[in-house]
Amino acid sequence: MTQFPLIFDIKDTLSNDRFMVEVRTKGKVLASIEAGQVWLYGVNPGGLAGGGEDFDRAYVDFRTTFTNVLDDLVKEAQTVAEFEEMARAFLLETNEPTMAEWKVAVDATRSGDVNIPGMKREPADQEPEIVVHEKTAASDRPEPPGISGISVTPFALAKAA
Image (cartoon, rainbow, N blue to C red):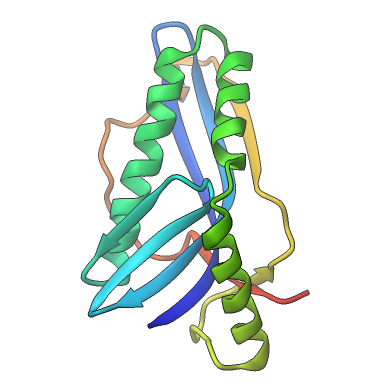
């Protein structure tokens, strides 16, 4: 089993009948190649996973689940501030066993045992981050639901500080 410590940077536009927000999140996932499948296990947020026969399919699965959770939270929230609080709590949930594996994978990148050629690198010690921006103009309406043009570009390989 090969594991990669990844940092994701995802932007979503979500709305309910009270408000619309653009949400940018940076978090951590552990990519794991297991028996011919790729799995992305959430570190922050800790309660998510996505899998598929290759990295792109695993990303689509993880990304869809991630966005669905945020969409559920925005539908539940009465205000932007309430949504931001709930989304931050979700992002900051840590899966401690997966975090331990993620740290081992960071050490493997430091030693050169693990690499993804061409993938940008970011410091492993950065904290999860969420930025919520309320959108108000009619031109800020979100695109229709769906994911197209998926690639692994929202990820960076975590590097040791």
